Length: 304
Ligand code: GDP
Image 1 (spheres, rainbow, N blue to C red):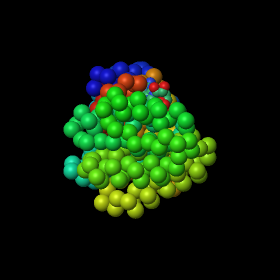
Image 2: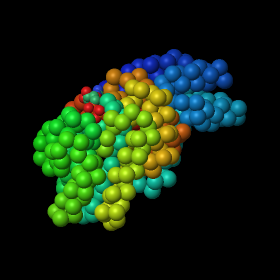
Image 3: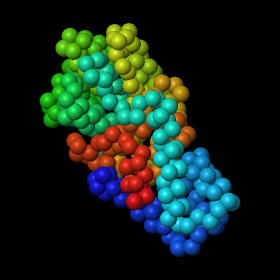
């Protein structure tokens, strides 16, 4: 939690200081709520989530006197509800592989968002949690990607399935990986899918194709399609999420680079506007700098 707090320092500095300045010592007024609105929008919380959270607060103000402490508590509650809604809809409070079953997690994301790093961190988390895991290096378009994935695999002693031939077909890598997992009874296969393709259309096609192969080879598998988003890209990331969510059957989001970003509020926009559960958050470059998402922790770190 401390790490997360440190990670969210920049968002918080902007947000909390301003929020608390806004709140002042006197009971909340409509003008104070207008100030909160500007602050939330500036932290990339997005129009929809901001309206939802503050709409509820405005309604309360119409009926009763609300002191600043209660205002802050109420605001946190509203923000948590926004983050929790897609998580509750998924029926899975915490995303974890099912034990003694084949789980396949596909990672997708445009270049540079931290997809490969996230894959390495997830493999490490899986091993620390006692899962058998392997990585499919199916981002075969980028020369360095396979090598980079291999380094992450070695760090956690997780086998990496790859195809050394140039321009290898990602489908062939996934085929090999699923085969190996089924033979060994592996519980979690992490698939690095291509993120280099420039247009979103191609990226989505790539993901759909990999998804079809997995469904065909391993109909028994529990499949997750996770979009990796760079929090520091703020609302741009949200647009990516919206585009991908519709076309690629995404089931969740990993939000990276929350450290050093003043736009951590984008988590709320993703949950509210794309309707996707945030599943993990990355706040650092180290192997352990990834944690399962928890709305309570997140909001406390954001508005500590
Ligand atoms: P990819 O192109 O999406 O696979 O991105 P990479 O995994 O190669 O990461 C791109 C850069 O972002 C690297 O320098 C990573 O160390 C860095 N990075 C990834 N995740 C995080 C994070 O949570 N915090 C910070 N500060 N840097 C990160």
